[in-house]
Amino acid sequence: MNVLEERLRAALQAHAEDFQGHPDAWRRLQAGRMRRAARRRRLAPRASWPAGFVIPAAAAAAVLAIVVAAALVVNGVPGRTGTAGASRPTPARTPGPAPRLARPPYSSSGPPEMMLEMDPPSSAVIGLRVPWIGKKADKVEAYFWLGRNNPAFWLDQLNPGPQFCHDVVNLTGESSGFCWPLPGLGSGLVAAVTGSEGVGTDQTIMVGVAEPQVASVTAVLSDGRTYPGAVGTGRGLTDKAWTVGYPWTKGYPYTRGARLIFRSASGKVLGTLPAVAPAGPPQLTRPTSGGVRVYSYPASGGEPAGQVDAYLIDGWVGFWSPIWGGTISQDLAAGPPALAGLALPFGLNRGYHEDAWTKLLSFGYAHANVARITLRLPNGRQVSASMIAVPWPGLRLWTADLPVSAQDIAPRTIITATGYDAAGHVVGQVQLGQLE
Amino acid sequence: MGMANLHAGLDADRLAAEEGVAGLFRARYPEMVRLADLLGADDPEDIAQEAFARLLRKHGSLRNPDAALAYVRASVCNLTRNRHRHLRVVRLRTPSAPPEASSEQAAILREDHREVIAALAQLPSRRREAIVLRYWLDLSEREIAAAMGVSQGTVKSNVSRGLAALALALGEKA
Image (cartoon, rainbow over all chains, first blue to last red; front, side):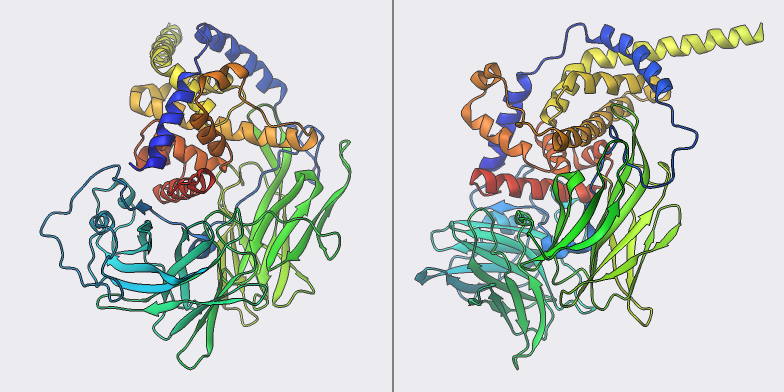
């Protein structure tokens, strides 16, 4: 257990001890049962709630459906973390002799033993160096290896098979890293981010894997500054490993607008990825102009009419609506996935804990090669989205209006959006996620 | 007669079920109140009571005490999440300052704990749930997945991302 985990446990324990149940709680529960039963009867669904787009004043329990799935590779932060000097929650040794490790080519230090014990290497351990920005003579070292799954470790139990591990060490000896199942490359994805680590207080190190034809990686910031990274491979590594460092914006371990450019040996750009770190997207401010109307809803039940607007801000697509009090979603427009979106249920709030959705509004953006989008509900029902042209290069928006019953979109319902190109081939598929 | 006996049998079943719930309530109610509190419920007692009330309506669950506990735990998570939805709407319509710990609580909690709890409160609900279930209740991934109603992979992701966000907020390594 590392320091953070110790602090966390202590704080949770202390906070929990400060909270006691009411000594008369059982009797109150029994009494409450009768009140709740009466309330349920009063709040029984209407026989014919209007099918149109209605937001009653007391209703409006709107919920964001978070886009999951495809963004994982880019946003992903993955599985387990390890920090030099920290102990593991469930110490476990893999039987048998320790593997003989290849020496990292650039360093005599290597990753910490704890990391190597976590998922013992089944490949060479390779080391790549990038500059420590602002410290000319110093370097940051990133080590990579394929690790054997260690099922004794509670965080390893879910992902059988090899793990792609990294550990980033700066020259003060600080180190952090983790292992995660190898992401799948191909289908146009030449590289994937498997993690990011902060170095000092001003630099982010991104790490990942790339296809064999990738020879270099460069981080390019929105102001044009470039930071070269390193690409390498070693015995037993099925993909190339890469790392690149760049300065971060205070408060976020990435710099807004930063892109990672992957090139071949001849300098040809093979692909790009947004440089997204685990802390999530920036807090975008709604511009005063330049928005695109995605959806409008009428005044109802004392609520004013409203709308959903989209903006492209420094490479991020953001959606706003007054009824949700501001930003309701923002995603990086570049890089995978080819389409993204979210789903918002509108409906009748039937009381304290029970919500009955009567309408589902889905919207999002897609890359230009997505000609049409189909949404599929768990009951098999399919709905085509309307595509909206926007004056943004390589992008379009989409929206779909789904009058559905509460049963159709029960909590944790997964709605799948599939994008097709003009020839009818699937070019992307995302789950619009759990409704919450 | 036959119908009367059937009613008598049903009543006996219901009484036995209530006794079972009462036993679980005595043993676990404070824990469920604390869980709701740690998950950020504004009225943890109401959440915990509603969770047990739902269990009372599910008599069949009592045949397996472990399943009953898992059911209550999942109910606390779901109810707290639903309550958050409701509160979010209320907050959007009636801007107000975020709730703060009472002065009494503030006096009791150490500064460090308050910092951690404050950082925890900023996490998305799923990550917060996963962190609390893991580091306070010490549940296994399988149990956390059952309580949250998600896959174990989602648990892993939420724990990892939650820790990463906490580390960032608290200036530590995850």
